[in-house]
Image (cartoon, rainbow, N blue to C red; front, side):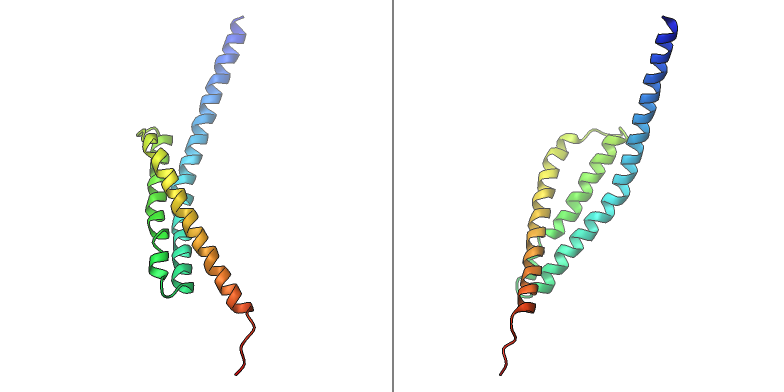
Length: 128
C-alpha cells in the first residue's frame, strides 16, 4: 500500500512540474509572439487604410491603431497571470472583447481596401 502512495505522489509531482513548464513556455510565447503580432497586424491594417482610402484613410486607420496597445495590455495581463505575479484576469474580461472588436473592424476595413483595389484593377480601362 505504501508503494502505491509513493508512486501517486511522484505522479502528482511530475504533473505539477509539467504544468509549471507548460506555463513557462506559454508565458514566453505570449511575451514574444504576442508582441510582434499586434505590431504586424496593426501596421498592416493602418497601412491599407491609408493606401486605399486616401480621403478617409486617417479615420479608417483609427480602429487599427488602438488595437495595438490594447492587445499588448492583454498580453501583459496574461503573462502576469501565468507567472503568478498578479491576478488581473477580471480586467482581461473587458480588454479581450475590446481588442476583438478593434481587430475585426480593422480587418473589415482591410478587406474592403483590398476589394476596392481588386475591383479597380479588374475594371476595364476606359479608352479616350
